[in-house]
Length: 312
Image (cartoon, rainbow, N blue to C red; front, side, top):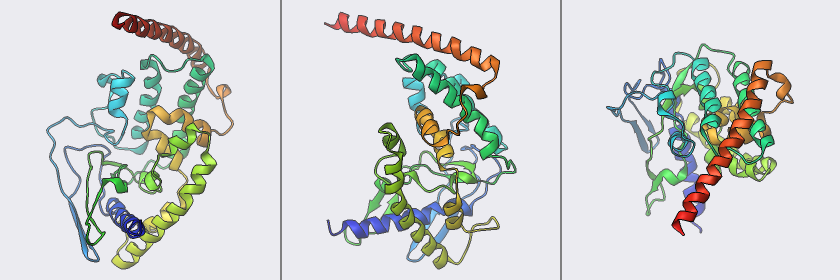
């Protein structure tokens, strides 16, 4: 128990150091894992960090940072043929592709919801998310930098003698993304993701618990910045300052979480606009969508019941 505080401090310090990696590398396009934009190495006190180039023989997958991509295919039946296969040259194109994925997902998942009102809420939330892109990403000039969504302490190896971080593992999801993604405070500063609190309708509790951990992370990041005496390549405020001023945490998190995009929208992004913000064609589509989802749900239940009966 006594070791938990130094371990946590070491994890936060290493996380903040590694998080700054994105600021050292600039990429021309979003989502091109076969052609890494750079290889970097830098010193931070007694530690040396290296980003090693890995050559992949797989075709480029533009949104490889999407942690629920495999789950979309296996659980929701999302077709691989509709996944992007080329990199993006602008933030709006990248987020537009994400919005399309969010809109397609409910059509492919048969057991989306068991209540017509919930189906309609999910439909509205995803269309409203798409409408928010022009608001949250109005500047399309774009600085694209490497972003890793899974750099949490559970992916760090700790030396038993020194209680220092010796390695960071599980880097299968990094991808060049709009810089705004790395300007957000990490979601993993708490043991459970934000969606766990949203499911319990406890967003205020998440903010209350996340705030002190975020401050600890930012103080560590500021120490790293002071010790290194080198700022990011882009002009303007330091990464810690940008992170304090960022207001896109929930939008960017919803972009990466297709299964939770609805609850994130209603809890954190909803600005009062609802079905009235949709055009006539989209409203008519919502009625058809609701009917189809209810029919699919009944067919799904019958199929499950038939399988259970045959196994008895």
